[in-house]
Length: 487
Image (cartoon, rainbow, N blue to C red; front, side, top):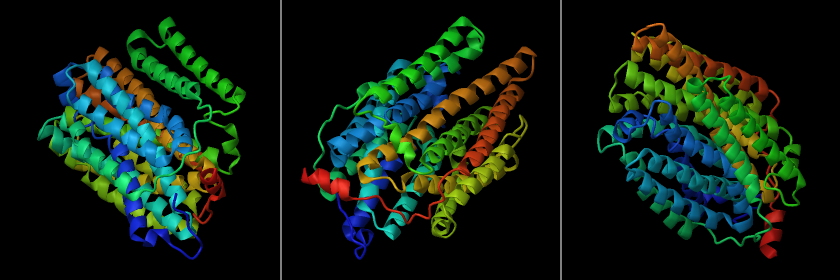
């Protein structure tokens, strides 16, 4: 990878700018697919016959394999080569997007989304570790991570806007087909811009270490999705939750016993890393889930069209962009901890406003104020957390650290969506059983879930006080990378 001296700025060069643009485009592609299908969900349900409960698999299926296999992707990036894995992952992502767009059944679309998640799990850690090992000088590193950090929440917001425009215009299948030309740009760009890195070689890659936590998360979400129908105290639900816990325990035991574990627990010796990742898990459980509930509220209760629902997120896109830019400027002055803490509390206030939605509400009065406040907090959290979780990490563990923080976001979103959907569904079913009007029952269910989202963000703010307050000046050692290349 490209390295730097203290007197040379790689970011000021043409190749440096192209490298940053390329890795951010790859990250943008991965993260936009966490939300681009949201506005298209009603159309997907109508065309492919999804039930209300199973519909969330279109979102959570992608998040689960994405987050669950990121650690494997990060380890593979360190061992097999970052450029090589970025190209392979992008190719798989594009192929599965094509299959998903052609899907003629519920099972085919879910399978395509699961495979898409695998491709993204290869792309993201490769792209972020390319960034962190290319831009190692302090000022360059802060700027590059600031651009990356702003790209992620911006992609989530742009996703719902693009999803609305495409699903009502060209049709819901184009929320997947649109990935194909972007994948082509990433693949061609990687071959032309990125140097061909020499990998360390395969050293007993811990595949079981990737399968166990992913299976645990899938089992856990499956149990939560079905619990409202089969009963929380039923033997089936209890056994499924116990199986999820057993798989996670098996993962921990496996990692402790292996000589080359997928997830070396020693990485948490880096100051503040565990708190940063925990903050990310809980915060994204709240942030990513709210897009799901607000989108359904606007379309099923307020009866907004897909284009109107997508356009409703334009203020979020603007707010996230402004917040990310300001946060990047503030980071060297105040540090990451105040940014994360303030961002989560601002986000919690915005989501609390959203939790007050009503069956007879309106976008301007009930949705817009909360979305704007939430967006300001979302941008600050991503900038702060990305810097806190990637600072001080040795270069040979850059892929693992990149995978860990990204996995924290996606798994947090998937698990949060499962838990909060169960809350919303239970509340809605309770009111319908009491003969409440359907719009009232839906709005109340969404409101209860959003209230839980705001509480999660408050909890994330508390944990954020334990993160390292980096100002983005520490840099990882590049010596291990040079040693691996020499070998």
